[in-house]
Amino acid sequence: MEIISRAPFAEVISFDESKPYGEKLYDLKVDNWRNRFSDRSKEPYKTLPGDIFVLADAKPEQVSDLQRIGRSWAFVAVTKIPEDKDEENSTSTSFKVKLLKDIEVDARQKSLFVVYLVNTIPNRRIWSALHMHGNLNIIKKVLCTSSLIEENCDLCSSQSDESLDDKLSMSIPSNLNESQTNAILSCLRKMHCNHKLSVELIWGPPGTGKTRTIGTLLFTLLRVGCRTLTCAPTNVAIKEVASRVLKLVKESFETDIGVDALFCSFGDILLFGNKERLKVGLRHAILFGDECQLAAMTESNISHEAGFGRSLFERLSSLGHSKHLLGIQYRMHPSISFFPNSNFYSNQILDAPNVKRKGYEKHYLPWPMYGSYSFINIRDGREEKDDVERSWRNMVEVAIVMKILLNLYKAWVGVGSKPNLSIGVISPYAAQVVAIQEKLGRMYC
Image (cartoon, rainbow, N blue to C red; front, side, top):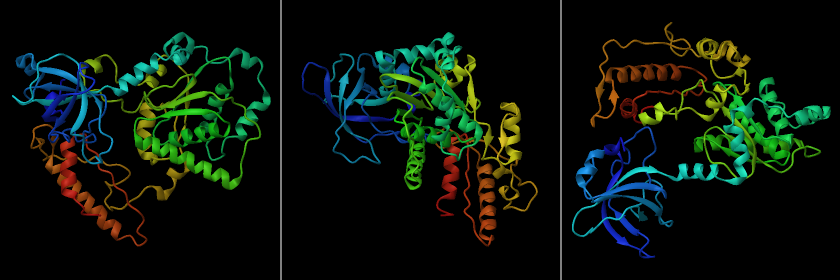
C-alpha cells in the first residue's frame, strides 16, 4: 500500500457477476495495463491467480485517497485466468475475481479501476506448509532452539559402522575439494540416521562452489534412491542446478559408475537456498547460504524493523547452529578476495590455484590504474532524477562508463587470438541502468 501510486493499474471495461451467483464471483475485463514496467529492477507485471487488487471508482495515488473515495472501493482477488491465450510478453485483460467486500457497483454508470497490490500465493503456500501435519516434526526442529544443540544422534554414534563412511565416500564424485566433500558426507550421514531429524547449514562464501556442491549432493542422493525437493529463489538458479545434475547423470552413464547397495531408504529431503514451500513428511533440511552477503530487500519499513529481511540461514547461524564452510574460492583474483576474506570471513577462505595463475589477471588497458580493481572518483558528476522523478542517474558517470567500454572494446579487438570478453556494468539505481542501456543500444553486438 505504501507504493500504490507506482503500482500497475487498468481501467475496467466490464464487471459482471458470474456463476454460481451469490458467491461474489465476477468476470472482470480491463483495457491495457499501465505501469507494468514501473519497477525496472523486476520483471514486467503479469496477472496471476492470487493477485489482490483494489477496485475503486478512481485511481488512488495514495492510501488516503481510498478514505476520500468512501464506500466505492473494495479488495478483489483473482481466482482464475483463461489458459488458452498466448501472453508471453503481455498480461491478461480478462479474468475471474472474487469480491472480498460487499459494495454497490454499477460499471455502466461510472469508471472503475483495478490497482495491483500483492500476490498471496507464496504466503498461502508457506502457511499451508506450516500447518501440514507431516511437516510438524521438522518445523519443530527448526523453531526449537534447544534442539539445535544436540546435533548428533547418540544411537548412531554408539552403533557407527566403520564401513559406512567408505561406502558414502565411494558414492561421491571425485571432482570436489575436501571442504565440499566433507559437507556432503556430513549431510549423507545425517540422512542415514532413522532416529532423529536434522537441519544442516552449508556456508558458501562467493565463488566457493555452492552450486557445484548442491548439484553433486543431489546427484548422489539420486543414485542412492532418496527423493528430494529443491527450492531456489529464482528460475535461473533452479535451471543451473538442474543442468549440473543432468551433466553428472550423463557422465555417470558414460563411465558406468554405480552404487552396489542403497544405504538410504526412500524418504523426503528438503534442499533450499531461500524460503520456499515444504512438502509432506520431510525428515531432513539442508540450507545453502551465506549470511555475510547482501540480505533480502524489504520494501516495507515495518517489515525491515521486524527483521524480516533476515534469512532462515542467518537466524539459525546466529543461534549457534554449526555450519560446514566451503573454504576455497575459485572466482576472484587474490587482490580482490583479500578484503572480503579479511573483513567478513576471518581469513578462513583460501584462494584456489586457478586464481593465482599469472594469466588470471587480465590487463586489457595499459594504464596502471586498471588492475584487478579500481576506484574512480567522478568529481564533476551531478545526480538528477529521471524523467518520471522516481530514480537517480548521473550522466557524467554514464559518459565515463561508455568511454571505458569503448577503450576495452578497442583493446580486445587488438588482441590477436580474440578470447571471449564479457563485461558487466552494475548500478544501484534503475534510472542509471536505463541510461547506460540506452547509450549502449546494440553498439557492441
